[in-house]
Amino acid sequence: MRASLLRPVVLVLALALVSVSRLAAAPPTASRAGVAEPELPRVYVDTTPPATSGRTRAVAAGGDLQAALNDARAGDVITLEAGATFAGPFTLPDKPGSDWIVVRTSAPDSALPPPGTRIDPSFARLMPKLMAASGPVITTAPGAHHYRFVGLEIRPRDGVFLHNLMLLGQTGTSLDKIAHHLVVDRCYLHGDPKKGTRRGIALNSRHTAVIDSYLSDFKEVGADSQPFAGWNGPGPFKIVNNYLEGAGENVMFGGGDPSIADLVPSDIEIRRNHVAKPLSWKTDDPSYAGTHWTVKNLLELKNARRVLIDGNLFERNWADAQVGFAILFTVRNQDGSAPWSAVQDVTFVNNIVRHTGSGMNISGRDFTWPSGSQQTMRIRVDNNLFVDVGGPAWGGEGRLFQIVHGVAHLTIEHNTALQTGAIIVSEGAPNQGFVFRNNLTPHNDYGIAGGNTGVGNLTLRTYFPDAAFAKNVLLGPWPSRSGATPAMYSAYRGNFFPPAVDKVGFVDRAAGNYRLAGSSPYRRAGTDGKDIGADVDALRDAAAADKSNAGIARAQSAGCCRKGG
Image (cartoon, rainbow, N blue to C red):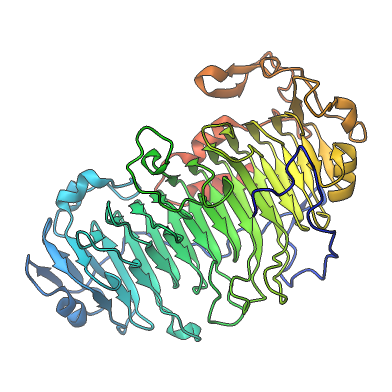
């Protein structure tokens, strides 16, 4: 998205309104008070540690790991000497049977964090080190399946730049040849600290999970880099309780056209991760380490369906190779051969987004190629906390939401935000089925603005013609440089316009406690009888470590998202 889009001082309409063509074939899901709800993942990856019934083969330092992989049978365990180095690349063969082959450290379970607990680099001494000087360290043969990796360090050889550490799934045209049932559990994957590495894991597989792991130093000059990227695998995918550090996009689905017709990565669970960029990559920070890596965003969906993003911490993202948005739902027929590309049924709940140039950029269509893409639809942004968004430290324009080109059925509800720029800017085709209610955020100069429509009523009528806009707290001070006043929202009754943030009644904003005090006028004042803004206790609970899918069940029972299909 170009930096000049809808600069608020000018408010120029950069693109003409375009007609919204027919909706994609994805079925509508259950509705809440007439609102089309996103469908949750239909399938979740079970990462329960498997019982092993076969042989155990120990591979000592200097041993042949590839020979052990070739010889392994379903149900076997391969133990690699803790701390030893094994030179790859390695290929996972396709084996008969559906029992798991476990490749793990020889260190006992008692020496590792228990399942459900994130590992970190302090455990590297217990980890066998798989590395390569060319190609991916680990590649799957066509159809390879049922491999689980536990307690490994996977990295390039010193001073070597690699494109991928793990290439899970090859580019092919047949679903039956896609690698599947793959789990990376409590592993440490990292790029070279000086040369970087383009990607940690290419998720072009199905039924794949990365859990309780630590992925860092994925960075490149002049190109995108990611801990994860998936574009040619159907899913389901589970990315839970990891530390994810990347310069380009920390998490990416899409970004390259699938070689399998009609493939959309689907049924994706992204929960309880810490997603961040270090300040040593920021050119104007005192800790800057001297290499200008290409920095973009913290999470981007270009082709994805049925995605649950719950209980994550997203932090430290600044304007660099993009304009500073932390989260992007920007559908993209990347190379022009995948007009079925879609971003649909996305549930973004219970997350914290902080220290970033802008918040979220959501686009309804992609106009890169004449063949276009499918319409973005059924997105819920519910119960999130956005703080330190914008300002000179992070660049960008401090926008909370940029919603453009005809997003359908977008609900933004019960969020608390402290941003320096507009709440919403929009252009292009109108966004149908828009809900914005029970949110607490500064209005700042331009509040809700669009191309050639000024602030407030006209923007909402033009770009969000059937909007439900109620019980929002839009903070002053008033007036602003734009001359905006609460009267500019007169067509939408039931909102609140306090003159300043200190009138909200936070428990302790200076200490980062954004709960509403009992004396706050906005306690239990929402359309649903709940506090306006985010439920901070629910945020805490969603981020807490668990060893099951309890977080999903909690989200469903709380009513923020429903199990679909």
